[in-house]
Amino acid sequence: MRLVQVLVPTGKRETVLRTLDEEGVDYAVSDESSGRDFVAVVTFPVPKEAVEPVLQRLRDAGIERDAYTVVVNAETVASKRFDALVEKYENDEENGDRIAREELASKAADLAPSLPTYVVMTVISAIVATAGLLLDSPAVVVGSMVIAPLVGPAMAASVGTVVDDDEMFLRGVRLQALGGMLAVGAAALFAFLLKGTGAVPLSVGEVLSIPEVDERLAPDILSLAIALGAGAAGAISLSSGVSTALVGVMIAAALVPPTAVVGIGLAWGAPEAVVGSAILVLVNILSVNFVAIGVLWQQGYRPERWIRQSDARRTTIFRIAALGMGLLVLSSFLGAVTYTTYRNAGFQADAQDAIEDVLADTDAHLLALDVRHDGGPLQEPEAVVVTVGHDPWTDPPDVQSVLTERVNEVAPDPLSPWAADEVSVEVRYVAVSE
Image 1: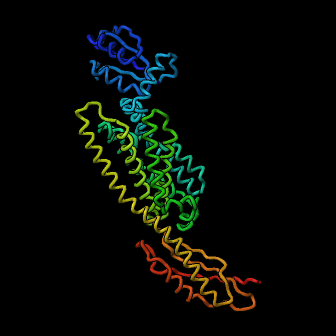
Image 2 (image 1 turned 90 degrees about the vertical axis):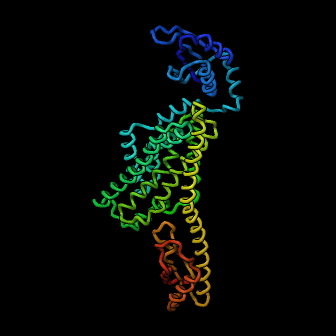
């Protein structure tokens, strides 16, 4: 519920009070004695869903837009009359369970922190995320998400679009772009210092094989669902007036770790290995903004003045279309990764069948099969390590060339320009007693 205070202009007192009576709103009136162009201060409690329609009625009655209107949270209102008012507006399908347009814009503006705070918190978040990834510590990575101030700029850009506030929209876009560049730069610099000082004495292959890093090198289509869900949750939590803190962690989960992986790849001199993470960052940013704008527009948020609503509709449609087009193009990469993952699983099964078929004509048998992938974004198969067991009293069968030929017969055609033309096969022999 909300407590609203309105300054009543000279000559509008009776009209304003009559409007509140017609809405069934109880109020208290006190004289305004500052000597300005106001005669009274009207204070009244209303449900959060009623703020926007009641304020609109008051503006129609003559409350000027340059007059002060203050809306604050109210903890409790004990009144049967207020209960009836709550029931009335809870059943209002047009307004729904959402806060007022003015309150939405204010909350979105508050979520976007000041520039110095935003810069410092983004840099700290990126450094913590980088450390967590290199330590292979999910707990540290989650901690970096908690301190990342990323929900504010995304929501500010989305709200600015639907209420036709270009200043808020541009501020949100600028902060998102700045945050992305800061996070990559901070992660790369921190990782480079760790590498240069020997604090992390790992080769590029060892770094990229760290599980927390590796899982973000080749994101699949499910990553898109995470970002879309985060954007929708952010818009709904903001418009319903509940805390966005946990949703902010969700949005940071979609953005901070892959951004840190990009920095790690740059520091270790393997930019081609983190193309997937870079694309994932862009996809997630577009997804969050795309779905947040759509949710807020669907909930009925529009500019305050009706003459601006047609312009806002055109702007919203254009931005949703532009975001959707960019998202479609970039998401095709995620689809390719998903397809490659499925294809690689099929290749491993086919390779195992081919190897077992070759070994069936010998006294040896297959003990283990390890398919290794390159460091590219599509994780193309690069090598196959075959462990063959044989009788310790006999020489191992010479099947290297045959297995190489058979494995490459079932190997998929490479999709990535970085992929090798042929899959190498390494045979390891182990003497096994019956």
